[in-house]
Length: 68
Image (cartoon, rainbow, N blue to C red; front, side, top):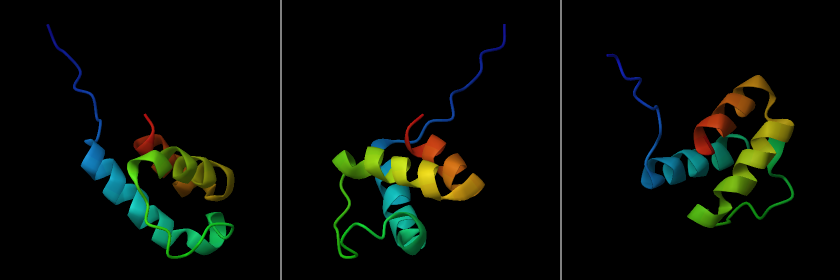
């Protein structure tokens, strides 16, 4: 019997990924937010939403990693 391992990130990994995405995609996806915003765990869904809406294909894929 073969079990498939889930490819999920820990909360800390998701937070790091969200912070990096915010920096990398700021002008394209998050122009309406303060540039110096300190991203926390509660902000991850909003980061994923911005990536889905304005991040193109790569942003969409990144959003899926943030909110599986």
